Image (cartoon, rainbow, N blue to C red; front, side):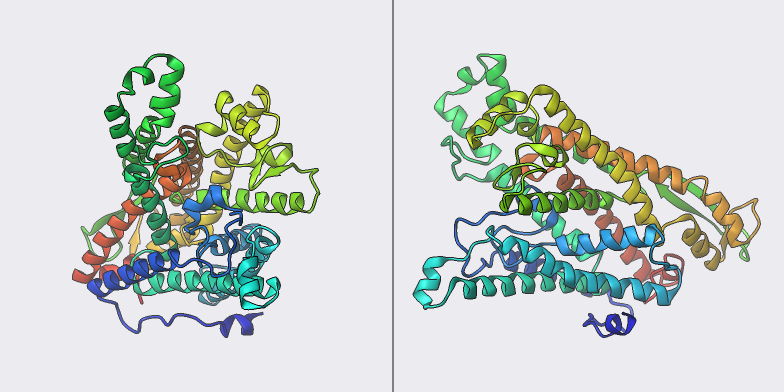
Length: 488
């Protein structure tokens, strides 16, 4: 496969260091292109189409009914597969070896192409429906329109992949992170100020909704009983979601600053000292994308089977599981998914019997287990496959001419010292971020961005700020690039 990987189209790397202002321009240009693509609808799609990934849309960075409906789904799924294969030592790769690194990147890109096709085809089997009226007007069969939809979705998936590559090589951060921030931020803004009415006649946005409540004199009714306070003030009025959003923002910003600083000294320059920070969220919150993406792919299998009349894993109403094992494996996204009165109302509106209290509790328990256990497992895989593990970190420190004071100046000694902290902090951070995601998902967030999406956005924006500061510093002091591993 290596010759095939080597021939895949790729964005050229810059021949020299890209100036900071040029990186900003590239990043803004790709962000603008992303918003343009998210507003280009799929030509020929029926209004009766179903979005299979509606519950995961915020952090998949896709837009329902648009040419980029797949979002970063194919990229994340390909990453999951490779991380499992490499982390499980099924594929033997030494990611500190440049040749193996190139092979890994080529394999990932090849898998992304495959996943674009594999994630597009199932959605065209009765979920993204062709517009029969358009087919009749053009005088063609509906399968022609379906084929055209397939081509559009694949083009959108490929564009997202190469846009991510442009940002990674020419911009700041990664395209995946940029698109997640863009999608979630859009949800947060519309959740605050969207004045369009919902089914109740009130505005969707929190601010115009409360202005309407005050102007119509509804406050007395809203605070008349504990049930009304829950229904109208906390849930319906979005107060609980707003409080959760603020709390998560504060916690993530604080936790991002919590770290263990390992002292370092230069081997040849006396008095030259430094510190290597090991953050509590060492693997960032990106493992949460992998956990939710895994759940999304499991649900995709359930939806496809149910659509063919195979319901032993569970039945579905649209893309929502209503019973069976798929109900327990689905993600919790808001209070409507676990507060019994809301669950009962939702299930009755879909024409299904509501689950019992113990079933709702089991659903919460399974989601909590998947988030915590998955956060730990994917965090460990993530640091090993991205060069953040103890061994890779020890090599970087040794090659930079630094050492841990009081220890022998060799890679093995530095690795042994790093082994005391990095794996343990990674496990604790993965479990913590999983619990934080569960908390946000149970209480809901502004605009339905989801707990995972909100966590990712806050963490990504914080790290983007750090990247901006780092890029400015390295432009002023180019010698720092070798230590930080930023050589072009």
